Image (cartoon, rainbow, N blue to C red; front, top):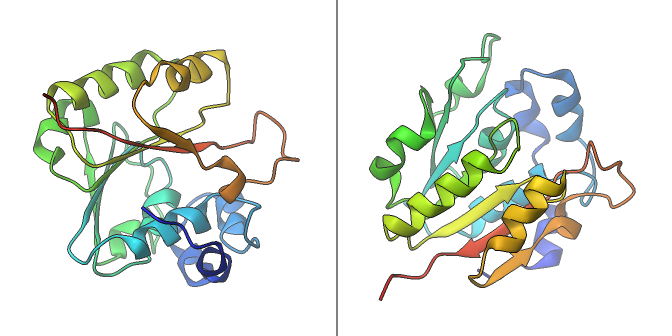
Length: 196
C-alpha cells in the first residue's frame, strides 16, 4: 500500500460526521489532517481496489466504520458486542456498511478473505488482540491488519512489539503528537504473509 501525503491531506470526511453517535468523534471528522486518525482511515479505503472488503472488530459509536465507508466501492463489515448505534442517522444508514452485534473473534473465520481487518477492541489489555492476531495467522490471513491504540498502554505496546512481520507505525499520519497519551490513537499496518 502506498500512501500519498498530498492526497491524504485533501481527504474530506466532513459529510460523514452526521453518522457519528458521540459528539467528540463528530468534531474529529471536522479536524484538519494530522489531528485525528479518521481521515487516514478514509484515505486508506480510497486506495483499496474496487470491491475490497474491510472487517472492523469493535464498532462502538461507528466512527471508524463511517470513515472507512468513504470509498463507496468498498464494503465495511463492522461488529461489536453491544449495539451503541441508537441515534439516527447512524452508520446503519450508510449503504456500504453492515453492522453486526456479535463477537468478532467468533466470526473471524467468515471474514478472513477481507482485504483489511481493523482491530479496536476494549479494554485494550492485549489479551483479545493477541488471540485475534494468532487466529489470523492460523487462518492464513493475507490482507492488511490495522491495530488501534498501540501506544495507549504497556499492554498494547507489547502487542505491537510482539509482531514479527513487516509493520509500519502510521501514527504520525493520523494523530497530532501533542495529544495526551490517553487520547492518542495509534494506527498500525502489518501485512500477514501466507504460511509456508
